[in-house]
Amino acid sequence: WGVDGHRAVGKIAEQHLSRKACQQVQRLLGTETLTMVSTWPDEIRFYPEFKETGPWHYVNTPSGLAHDQYVQQLKGQTSPNAYNILEAKLKELKDPSKSQAEKVAALKFVVHIVGDVHQPLHAGHAEDKGGNDIKVQYRGKETNLHSLWDSGLIDYQGLTYTEMATQYDQHLHKKEIKALQKSAPEQWLWESYQACERLYKETPTGSDLNYMYYPQHAELMRQRIVEAGVRLAGVLNETFK
Ligand code: ADE
Ligand code: ZN
Ligand code: ZN
Image (cartoon, rainbow, N blue to C red):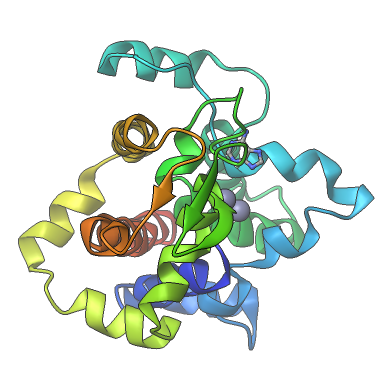
């Protein structure tokens, strides 16, 4: 996601933190908040000293995988990706041998990566760079499928991240929140992968996306943002019990 997507995820998570998790997060971040640190991994990724973190934001897999094959792919990939780095950073957060500074950095990555793995195009194919190479026209402007989903649809919506966090959260019931927080990262990515496969199919390169695209996809975008926020709170509540 872009800035507003990540901030909305952070803000929704803050609305679902337990007392204990809230305290531990504050102890680590000081005056910063989950919302404000959510974009940090994007701010650093283009500096040479953080070059290795580029692939930490997504998981590329081939198309046409069934559920079990997909999970096998996730567990089998050994080069750093969003899936195995998220697992590693969550471990670091609980590891007493890690320094405060290491835990702060780990927390920032967790906040960001839980957001990114819910962006369908972050579970795309390597050959088109998760849709970055799929040129499309959106409302008369040149863009690409990845960028449209990172920020194009969110910008078009015209809400601030605070408004997104408030509005998106209103329709959630306790039961749904519980169910969302019971699921694991493999499930989050599987959902993104399935949505991504549909988006690829309906959007060949060169597509001219008209006024129907936003109304037809706004609900999926809204859903992925709110699910990411609620699940982020879930993993932090579990980590800081
Ligand atoms: N951003 C840059 N490369 C990417 C890829 N291969 N998949 C998803 N997002 C990306
Ligand atoms: Zn992206
Ligand atoms: Zn990212």
